[in-house]
Length: 231
Length: 226
Image (cartoon, rainbow over all chains, first blue to last red; front, side, top):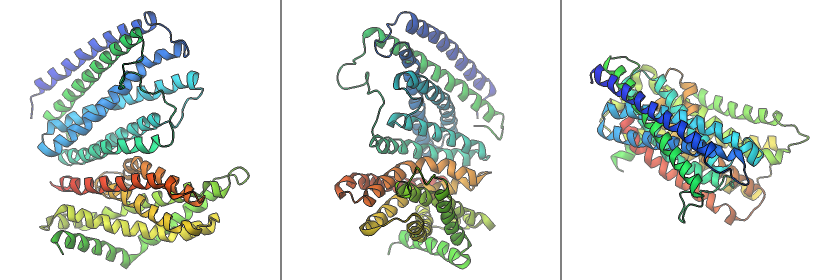
């Protein structure tokens, strides 16, 4: 149990982080549109890269956090871990949506199609559905301990499913641009673009932290008030 | 025989006995599968899509969807009269209870699949020829994996307000890897392709089964403790 004051402080801190992240994001957009060169082959649509990649990164990060906190919950049985997993899942849902809307916006002018069943596209869509199922399950269960145990099991199974989906869809054949930053050889991105990407990654990660912190504070507050729908 | 296996077999035998005495669920599930086959036949334009080209997808969608429908019943049965509580009060390993439920569900889904396959051959004019053994092996490997996850999710979904909707929402993403593998294998088997082209898919299916059966055995006890 925590006091409502602590939960309130967590929410305020989260909102503070979100404000800073949004300001940083405005800077990133300025940097991306004004001070970063236009890519020679893709033209202006390539700018979506600075939104899409960080959103994807945050969605994957949030998803891993759900999986890890689910494992820890089943081990330690600390209700805070459950609230944390829920917060990360909701933030992940938001970032997956950003990733899934910016992807087709870029795909249409560059690939010539809004959607294709490429390996990474399919993977992120499935990720989105697992988050959605996780969220729906939570809202359909009323007993807090049962909800925590059940959603932890779903979170863990979902995390293990991801590599299988990736492997099986990859064997279909893939269209998606190959990794250009995290690869064994040096990044093949010009410095100006890499700088913008890294700045954007930083701003997005901060936004993710802000979302999770604020949502975690709300969850803890609801728990403190003994709200049956808490957590 | 170890206690673990004995308990699992007892739970499995109990479920099969319940099923055997009413047979309503089994017959309904087979009828459902047959109807899916019929609907698929009319969900294509005969002028543009040949039966042969669609056959593997039809087979696997029918198998997996009737599997999911069948799983709903697995824990709904235990919910009546608080039967699950009685089962959980027994001083036995909960993984063994899971294993028993899993084996009973497997038996149920395999029976539905065995009844559907001849109908599929009949309706879609497929010549199984030498592919029968391969298709049976594929069905065993693909079904073993998704029923393992489905059994756990059935236990979860039965506690929610809208179980019939919750179960597919949770299980369908988990059908993707087995479904892709099974369709790829079946397409190649029916086209008489060499075994080397499908060995990799068999390995993925087997790995999926191994990982998810183990994981579900480990996770089921924490699902159930109060």
